[in-house]
Amino acid sequence: MSTSNIGISGFAAYLPPYTVRLADWCDWTGDAWEKVKAVIGTTFRMSGPNENAYTMAATAVLRLIRQYNVDPRSIGYLALGTESSTDNSAGAIIVKGMVNDALAEHRLPQLSRACEVPEFKHACLGGVYALKAAFRYLAADGQGRKAIVVCSDIAEYQRASSGEPTQGAGAVALLVEESPRLLDVELGVSGSSSAYRGVDFRKPFQRFAEQTIGRFSQLKDFPVFNGKYSTTCYIDAVLGAMKDLFPRLTSAPSTFLKDVKAVFLHRPYQRMAEMGLAVSYLLALAAGGAADRAELASYAKSSGIDGDALAQELTAQPALYDLVRQQDINADVYPLATQAARILRQLPVFGDLMTKLGAKRMGEVGNLYTASLPAWMAAGFEEASLNAVPLAGERVLTVGYGSGDAAEVIPMQVVRGWEEAADKIQFSAALSNARILDRREYELLHDRSDLPNRRDAAGVFYIDYVGDRSNHFDDQGVEYYRYQA
Image 1 (cartoon, rainbow, N blue to C red):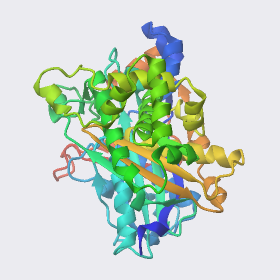
Image 2 (tube, one colour):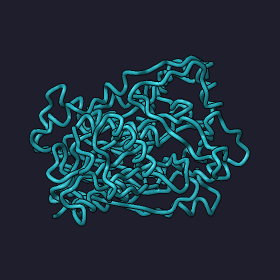
Image 3 (cartoon, rainbow, N blue to C red):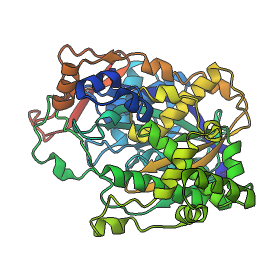
Image 4 (cartoon, rainbow, N blue to C red):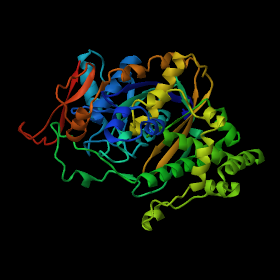
């Protein structure tokens, strides 16, 4: 079995109930609302004090099984992509345990004992790596079975940092199988890139050394990051993956990007996704023929820069980690591309390239790390089905990214009859349980991981308590979970 007949048949999401309106946040902080809205979005979600990456993942997986009427016994592979683990040993097996408990409560068959349960970590790209591994599993020893990939994360940043308005939390589960009902994944026509970047975005354990733990032992997972350098790493990784993709295409790169019906990107915030697509299109023009190079030259002229210098910058392979060695991480490595992209984003050609399907919904969730890309896909296909957008037979492009840094670019083809699977996604329903936090509630939840009058929703998993060796065996720090039926 080749991976050409393996793909995605469904999505299900869980988004925690607490939300912060960025307009309110701007009132609290003095930031400019119109700028924040244009660059980032409108709201972001926050996990509850008794939630973590595993509980959110389990809720999304259970919803996927029930929404798509999946026989749990057919699942041979359950993979978790996350950078928000709270256990350095177990991962997806924790999710499997929770899901099996809930399935038993609903008197449904349980996930197979023979189900593989790996966890994948590479910043925001862990979910894409898990997805690619699921395709390979189904193409090899997993033939005839199904796989579930779940991406679950909590993006949180210190207050008053540049990352604060880009927070978010949530999980998205994907059903992967042969003869897919939504998207046929074209792994044979995909692109990859990876290179060590050092300090663009890291989560060393030392950050936890002097923290006071909350009521459910949840430590604050604030990352170490360097904003400008991280943006440079993002641009460089996406360009690297596109350079690997373009030679595999049967059409000119610019034609390919214009012909795809939608481009779904990793979206830490709106402007970052726009930048990723803009530089990709500029690179496609630089790699094209005379007409493409002429179009690139026109953007360069409008930007007041030299077209040949722009093409050279786009096609170069800068050694970004040298900036760390030289203590110069704020150096502008892609100044011409950034300037040209700023012009390009204002033009109709970019408006046609930039995917609008699901974009409004993504502005309401914030950064979901590994779940960001699949969330946009889920929101986009739900919206397309609701609005009867003709997608059957069309290609879409997915662009994943993980700090550190690495990127994956994977084309997918929409299968005929995709609407039936899209109608079961229920992304809007997952968004509908929002409780808007005021400033005091936000700061309390952010700083202490606690809120008074917590209410648990039905059909959701929570942390019940945390072990403290009081059970006559060693369980210090081990989380115990419960399911709210």
